[in-house]
Length: 303
Image (cartoon, rainbow, N blue to C red; front, side, top):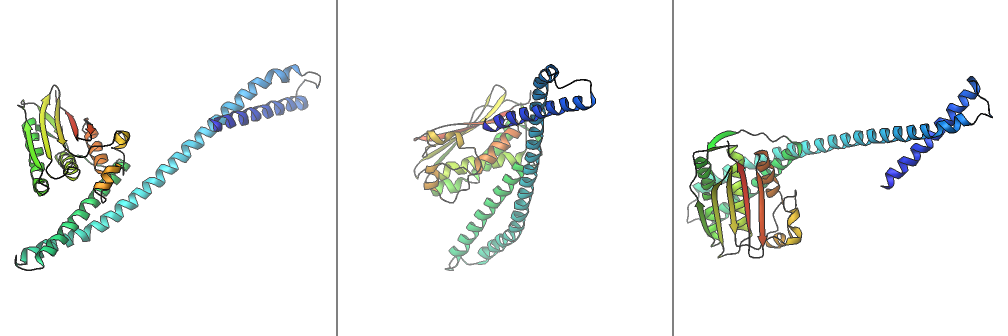
């Protein structure tokens, strides 16, 4: 508001000077005299208004130019980050496969077996973090690519169930019960990128595992609701503080209790999941309390 006021008065001053200059030109080249001030007074409002409009237009154009330059610089930074992450990912991927081969060749009785497996797990964890950062960079630049295919609702249900089943051991290691429930589905279809749907499902399931204490429960439900396919994950975890719920899908944001429970998170999983869901024309919502959290993904069904 203060800047707009400054622009206004600067424009008014410019308009006043334009009016005075125009009046002086007429004195020199025109047919009016110094005594004829009525013309000068009549033109002042016009030139002041013109000066204000011109000054606002110039200021607006400058803001637009600065914004474009800023966006260009941000894009260059994102490209540099993505390129650096790609270069880091390549050797790490080679290391991961070498560690897996070494673990397979090491006898179970060897005291090194557990250390090698632990090293492999940590390498995989770092690779997953890098993949998330790369995906975040793509989302920020609007460069994520999608490969949409038509899936029946039953095929989509199997895709989600299979992707979650691969992570069940992590839940069982924390003594968490996992229940998947599916209501009857019709023969209708959805258009999805299967890779992105897997990431969405596994991100939500992984969060439920991380933030639910041992002995808790996770329930997954899939159903058809009018023109939408609903996929929900409910946990009995710590919940999201009410004062922080509006920020939960923000990039690099983590709630205070999540930071205390797990220090190594990046705070980009839900940001990426939301971006993927919206690219499908869908929506993600949640409800949360100290007794647990439920995330609901809604995907449109083809008519």
